[in-house]
Amino acid sequence: MSHHTPKDSAPVASNFIRNIIEEDNRSGKWSGRVETRFPPEPNGYLHYGHAKSICLNFGLAEQYGGACHLRFDDTNPEKEEQEYVDAIIEAVRWLGFDWGTHLYFASDYFDRMYECAEYLIRVGKAYVDSLSAEQIRALRGTLTEPGQNSPYRDRSVEENLDLFRRMRDGEFADGAHVLRAKIDMASPNINLRDPVIYRIRKAVHHRAGNKWCVYPMYTFAHPIEDAIERITHSICTLEFEDQRPFYDWLLDALAEGGFFPRPLPQQIEFARLNLTYVVLSKRKLIQLVDEGHVAGWDDPRLPTLIGARRRGYTPEGFRRFAERIGVSKADSWIDIGVLEECMREHLNEVAERRVAVLDPLKLIITNYPEGQSERCQAPNHPLKPELGKRDLPFSRELWIEREDFMEEPVKGYHRLYPGNMVRLRYGFVIRCTGCQKDANGNITAVLAEYLPDSKSGTPGADNYKVKGNVHWVSAAHGCQVEVRLYDRLFAHPYPGARRDGDPDGQERDFLDDLNPESKRTLRAWVEPSLGHARPEARFQFERHGYFVVDRVDSRDGAPVFNRTVTLKDTWKK
Image (cartoon, rainbow, N blue to C red; front, side, top):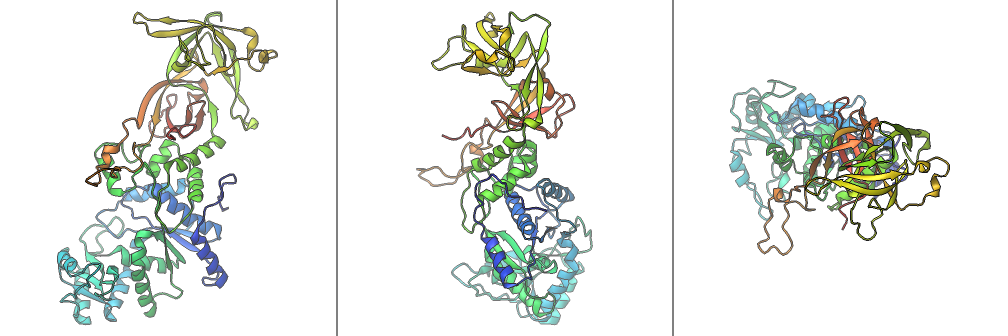
């Protein structure tokens, strides 16, 4: 596969991980091999932060002719489901990446992990602890005070092996014992103070069934998975930086026992994605879904990848975004506008143009014959003449935007008002003659006359110089459809953060920052060619932004359109 760097994007941002790989290739550390992995836990849906990680891991492997493994870290049977496995596979595929034969599950390695644990017991580097979770926590110490040894730390190898095997065989209740690594309770790094590496869990596993009563902790399983798969660069987010000494300690101990060859995988941490106007915390996303603030995990306002896909965001836009923001060690905030601009750029290239009227007002061409119609022509894409043109039927009654008429125009208003002339885009020049109103004085229709020799694309059409240009849809030929205008889910850039000048300095409820205007549903009129648009087809509605045919609620002949992004950043102050 080729390396997908957008040709016209901003210069590629810095990526210190590329520098590490280049140095490894120069030194011959891995003989030029680059193997990365994307290791989601199948207990939820992927979000925008995962997209950055996917683009990074798969992108680096692609760039250096290596492989990226898709591996499910399914070590917690109580929270994991096949539904999430399927959704994650679909999301990674949708982003345009392929793992080939490299699809793995942590549960594939449970036997090997168990052997590793028994080996650590035999060489005095692990022991069974019978303290409760609360007691273990109490003896763990603090950032400034060392921890204290468990009274069970000096059990004999024989007793530890016996207890661990009985734990495996289901003899004990959940929580009765744990297996801990035996490192150093006085270590300044709390993660080296005899971390728990196995716990009893009498739960049915989504793949292993009832085979196991003990399950490895993620921090124990992950390094072993990397080593089994011969991963070269194990790339993760910064919160795992404090775990790296244990990652290295464990693999070093197992390499001494002949389990894995050297060199051992190298863990490299980068800053996770922090986006304004978005929450990426799994807990908060679950709350938004469970409490009904959004309509499920694929709600187009939610920063999940299935939500993004439904909103019309593109894989190419995400790749472009990942390249543009780069990879760094320092935590920083990225403006959501950068992501939206990447989507806008890609959609501008690929989306065909169409006409839609979102707030319809009737326009009657009083001197056009009733029952008659003719074709006007509009380009499918102004920058791609090879995509050709399409017909727009023109008739006596049209729909125009309500904002395109003012009975008493304000200064600088160049659209329709009595006496003014405008061009109907791709059609004729018209002169406004007045309007019709109902009994309450509300405008129900605009009246105008057309100039028959002014049709766009015909000789003499350019003789008419008008300032206003109005788009329209034939009332007789157009289709009425549902259009959903999506906006940012939150109205504040840092949902839940305390406000400047807040005297008590407390964080606020992030739900207080929900944007009440994040979704508006309209009945709109669109040109006839859109009546049978297929799910996930993308278009630019002229003047209104980029829209996608909803992949869930659309039916043949009744498409539903979701707005992906506006034509420009409407949030810029």
